[in-house]
Image (cartoon, rainbow over the protein chains, first blue to last red):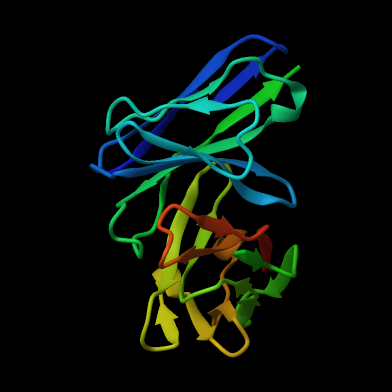
Length: 114
Length: 114
């Protein structure tokens, strides 16, 4: 089954404790992206990757890191989480050269930073 | 700069009545337009897209959307609402010239009462 898999689904952590949210897709997509969803703000792009070893910042990259070592994986790293990073996070992927192709989303990771 | 506006935070419709969820956009070139739906505890799912051609596009679950270039709108419609249509709906735009940039609206919660 074609899918984007995120882990964990729920995560509660404390300020400053480094964490990684994993994302994997099995559709051979070149493009992968991370979003955070906050009430009233919709989805905002954190980082995106056009292919392996090609990663760039989105609209809200502060406090996050991301790197693409393999085509199927695109982990999101929070080096020193803070309470304002409490949010619902989504990973998504699509074909890079077919710009009309829709995004495929994971089921989300709900992060709480205390 | 690209932007997407969904002017209504919530839309309430009686089952069996027609529904409309509004979306307007702003891009510098020709856009690719998408609608996604989000059910509780799930990621976004693709509903339909406008690329070119016929201004009325049909998608999943009986939804359709009308592209209006002069009004820069892409409203989501359904002739007869179902209770199961209750969910959060997002409009998104992707510029043909920039595959990396996908902008989402703030979302509209659709509530269908029996």
